Length: 182
Length: 435
Image (tube, rainbow over all chains, first blue to last red; front, side, top):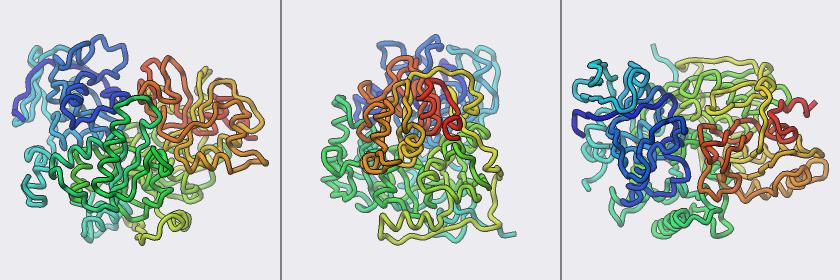
């Protein structure tokens, strides 16, 4: 993962659950099959209510224009389906910024390395709108809103940082000698 | 000062080979059972093969339990292919525990199948590729949901790195009033603490009212721990637990109990007599109101099924209320497993089987066991809300589009409330019919 993530933000609310990220009718797609991984990306966030003016991935497209999602609290609640972070990653999402994450989703982000889960105290999703440019500096733990010039801090990742830096649970276990080299 | 440990901490310490663990510690634990199903199994197998090689073997054949249950009765070819992927893997690895939809071993919903078939034992550690794996803490074990990547890791190593959760304790003493069942209790708690109120915490349920509940009702409570963000739900094992488990497996197990001086992040105390039948209105499981105070809500459908509300006890509650009465909206009866479906034709109330009671009340013919419409699923799924239906349901989630179309609405309720509401076509407090 690069240490600077910059791009347009897609803004959502609180409690975005896994059914809204990837509805159950698409779960027959198997993420480890490359064509189906791509297809999962095209359906990312398709379960959001129709009040959202824009789709995360435009109709007929496979990738999103928004590499950063900005949500509120409890992002990713609900099911343990790994299809959720995978659909976001497959669509081209690099990071999700939220006030808090549901833990299985958070864990699945880290285990897969698909998207970077970034927590902030600042309620960015109430301050910016879809399309605003954002820059996340992972080393300096800051998020900057380019248009408004506002910068806020991100929370420390704690013990999972070591797992992220290793590249996921498998590499972490290989580095520590717990399982053999691939 | 040395503090005691909670039941969750003791099970995790035992599984990590330590004397003591503390909340927040990251530890490697040994798994006893890994469960997967048709939705996450193929992806888990994909990760397992990618990381450990095409010829890798699972860590313990007896430890892997595969239960296809989500997308079984559908014409969708991709879903059929996924079950074939599981079959092929079971054959290749020679796994003894596979409940194949193609033959008489088929069971249905994984979270009801696991205890029925003796895979749930107190003191053990269960990881499952399904968030409702937390159900099984009801029998005094540590059980939690994980993603495909972590499951692929467990499949190859029998281990997983986890953070020890702090525990929140819910003590409920007294006697629940008639008409109040486990579903009302857990919905009330979720309503009180919110859908993120127990994020990454163990939710421990105790007190005389919990002890008085049957094993199945305890499962309903732990099942929805995830709806408050909980890592696991847990209830100390007792004579009922041991009798239930002993009837289904000969395997040895250990019972763990929280110490008197265990440390809790928070303790909530409730008086059982103060509970009333409740519902969770769209679009969140914490949008909880008393059934009697939810307003005049017109319904199109009533749905009784799933790991949360499709166990035998749930159908007994529904039948008790529907007996000799007529529903006025489409009412779906979806037994969770083949064993439950079988019991619908055997268990009688006043001489009539549960299935007879449902059909005479005007419900749709009981369906084949599976997860069915609880999570929407493929468009031809039985009971799926394909339009703008308003459905009162004994299931577990009511986020937008949960049971199918984004235009549909799900209202979560107990089997009593779902049955009473089927009689009136409006959200109804079941106590009106249970006097």
